[in-house]
Picture 1 (cartoon, chains in turn red, cyan):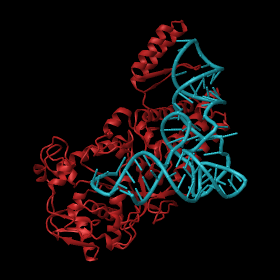
Picture 2 (tube, chains in turn yellow, red; picture 1 turned 45 degrees about the vertical axis):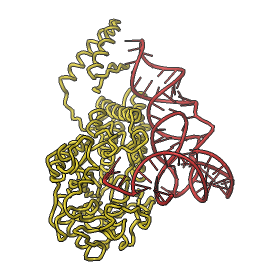
Picture 3 (cartoon, chains in turn blue, orange; picture 1 turned 180 degrees about the vertical axis):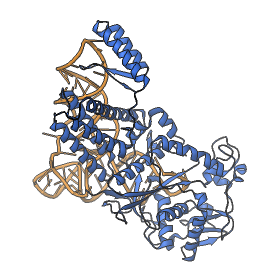
Picture 4 (cartoon, chains in turn yellow, cyan; picture 1 turned 45 degrees about the horizontal axis):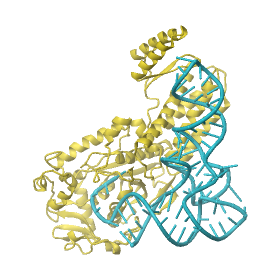
Length: 491
RNA sequence: GCCAAGGUGGCAGAGUCCGGCCUAACGCGUCCGCCUGCAGAGCGGAUCUUCGCCGGUUCAAAUCCGGCCCUUGGCUCCA
């Protein structure tokens, strides 16, 4: 079965074929380390993570690069608040980012390039653009000449002639639509002021902590867009397969990346463009600048990584999901259903020996159908929502089997467990199957309490039995009675 | 104003590329039954005739075509 993806460049769903048969090269526009990472960033990461996992599971070797923008007016604006200079502010936020990524169970990218470590690559690319006539120097700054690049606007369907004038650079630019590749001198205090939090110190003090580098055009700083072109080329080559970014980056950022790279190399830049949707909060985009965000850290603490992942994967990557108490509660229910189904399958499998003869055709067929529809869904533009539905069907099949039979189908359950672990665990990155088999003292103690409780129940002392159940619940141990005796799980 | 994406049953959210198996997946909610000392979990069934609005194409449309209305994102920093 072939993978199809929706390519922003063409607006169509296309067959995905990497340039190299065995390897997929993928670049994700990371983030600017100037504000706490929030749920919106986390969603894009998780979707990209699952894309990589799926590509690997169908046999590709994936080379995954995610960048960090550690040079920015927005970072300079935090000097004094979150660090003493630009480098320190960036480093402080970076540490938090890595923490959040680990907590979400993201697989590490192959490289996390940073702008400050690629200034040479950036300067080289700007020089090449000037030499080829795609860029011009003006007062120590260098601008990309939009009119010189024929394909400008092809990603976003924008017409450069329609662009609104940018008064700030009107004097230096030949055309208002031209954008900076290199900016002369340090940072502009006015620009920094626009990013400062209310009540923060005046920007003048912060501006001194901004980084600058030497270049053929004098001291200065790189423009915003050139970094991604330089870093992706350095780590993935002049042409690579997939570029992922938030949909808010389509224009101008991604559009400018294409212009710079294709002008500089004369080759196609990214072959497929995938854009993730914007998390909505009360009808508008969750955003650092709107200050309406929940940080990734807060969300992980409140909901846990599995519920968050379930929430993210319960919508297709291109959708704009609503972040609210109700939608997260729903994700919580889904995750619980999957987790219980998995635990039940493991427990039932372990309760019978491998030579058991019972065969439940319904269960086996159901597991096969789940694998098939999960695969079809993921191959259809990474439709995680439908794949999630398949996983829930798997839980349902296990429940029906365990409820409907006095003896269990060992091999059938084993297949179900494998599917949970392979699809839910390995592909979706949910915590299924990696919990080890250690029996803790806590488990022994719970079993001891349950024995006592059973004795009370047999004696008809239901008040005492219910009290024990309530008190265990208060400790996070959920007790369930059934014909075969009580069972429990830690919440 | 311009560009893009989207509007689906009480909520949420797939399906729209390749029209029929969609009297619309999965989940939540509500109701009934089973199970149970009770609860929870689970199982079985029901509810939801409807897919922004208007018109068209077709034997057949949530899915195709045209027009209109609305929402979100972008055109300024942004996953």
